[in-house]
Length: 210
Ligand SMILES: [Zn+2]
Image (cartoon, rainbow, N blue to C red; front, top):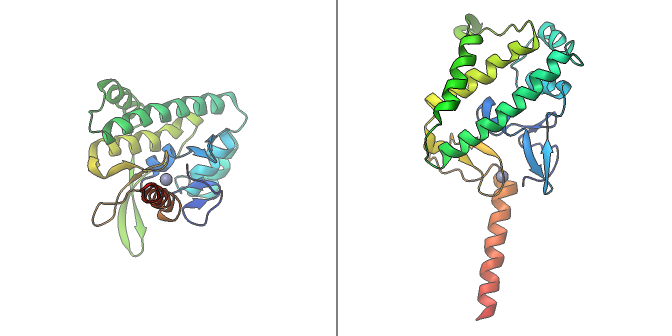
């Protein structure tokens, strides 16, 4: 498990951002911390905070609109469905990581939601040049599906699957963007060290036995 709350390394506002893809960071909102399962999105308020921290909700106008939905029945229903979707996506990611295929059922589910929440593009000026961005202007809680569905679709379609990985020491998933493609841990200073220390102790014990 990845211990330590609020590490400067990868943690922001109580969420972990080391997946290299927002959709994987979303997957990593359900963790094991200090040997216990930890839900980082227990309520709609935390989801709103996550959306702001990831910059999916990127204006104060949008932020107040999203926050105004908290406590509504629609918002709770959306969160419940979204978290169930997250766990279905986790199964699919695990399947991709193990080299198995993507279940047709899940593709069908994504296609249905892609049709319900189509992507709208907009040209924006960023740093003196134009970039195409997804226009995200949710008017009700269910409209929040869009970034999750499109993020999942991109992950399934455009990812070099061999770079999609689960940390060797914990439940965290990430997309390996390193040049060599040999990243094994969510964070070297936590999980990497833990594995190295364990291996060292194993060797030491083995050495003593002889
Ligand atoms: Zn880890």
